[in-house]
Length: 164
Image (tube, rainbow, N blue to C red; front, side, top):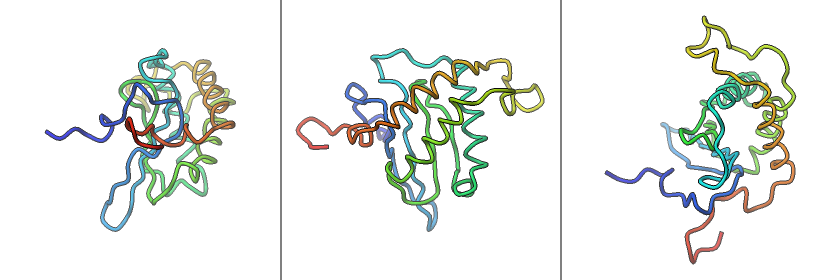
């Protein structure tokens, strides 16, 4: 079997950031997958499932209600390794183009107080596994990174010998 794209990234050199993970064609449309990396893989602790789950509910709600982007958002969800999230958008976009949307989304997560959308037995299959204070904390941490982002946090690290 061929190695999938996400397993070809050097996770030993990967920094927290906002990356284009891949671009695929779905009919005539380009689908851009973004890697929203909140922790440094294999070097920093991963997020716990409760805050990942809460961030997922808040971000999905925000993104699917954002007037300029809601019709382009295909998916927002966690990485299995719990170091970040994937955001799939219809269209051919760069990290720089999507940065304002992601920053606004994580400001929403940072500042959100109240009942987590969809956190009920009727609406969610694991509604008790939520942690809003930690989701707020991760939102603040990622906002701080995005507000001061540098080029090395917008492009995957190159292989040895390549330039980024």
